[in-house]
Image (tube, rainbow, N blue to C red):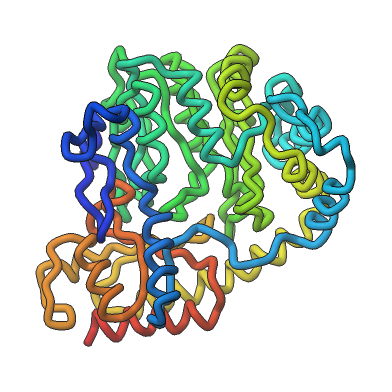
Length: 426
């Protein structure tokens, strides 16, 4: 069975990954500043993307596979809705902190359409992006000492949001052989009297794994049996391929309703990463608590962005289908080119827009006259020798792997993978 443990991740290619579970590093914290805040690790994916962009601006021919950001423009009808919103004086004023009522009602309809269950509008909170929804959920749900089960590889923001709320991340390792899917047996082995919640994501960032309905149902029933909350990140719900289908645990296991919260957003589905619109949907008491927090932290999300999100979730999915078709084509090409590199082991991505290859075959051996002992070091070699940016697996609690996004143009994708292949097999 894959190993389970408290969070401990080393340094990654020029920036710091999450430290030990205390989330406090003396060299990064002084009495001048909050230990709780100075212990937060910079987002690894954002750091890789920023470094790649800085090198490119300095004249280096960098190709970046780091950012989880569609390369498409936001669909035109959404942009037009935002332009119209700018001209409406009603959007120049404060609005309810928890979200525009019309948008919350639209999210009720959208959830029923896409997820197969219908919340009340009072159970919806509109947030400043998906990250904000994760943070709000952890802050409103967790007490110091509460444990959250987090299957690895995990999105880099999960452990930091848990730590800020005083919780403890308990990592459950998965790998290519397990399809990057955690089992009920693993969950039960990790459960303690302090277990408060499970962080669950399908389709997965960073692995592209998608859980089948029967496994989701089994996990949901286990959570109900033991009174454990499920925080379900559903932001990649529309990005699945082949016969893989997104299933919402709330629809498959109705009895979980009182201990289930879905976090979502428009960023990935509608190419709206910069618009900063997310939401959380859960029981009334949780949403009220998170809403109170948001009323002091941010007040309402920008009204123009909310109006754009209204157009997105209320419209048809034609543009989404077109983008998914492009991602699917790139997925096939990336899978083929990565597997052509001798030594790479790869689970075919089933959803989202990431490949997560196992690169352990290249550790401890010569690559361009240099030897890497970690994928963090290997990522540095690839960046410096091939001018290609990838995110090493240490950032996701999975040393030995790396994440490559295929949400970039076809020419860059082909050129970047050719460079990596030539370097690793050179």
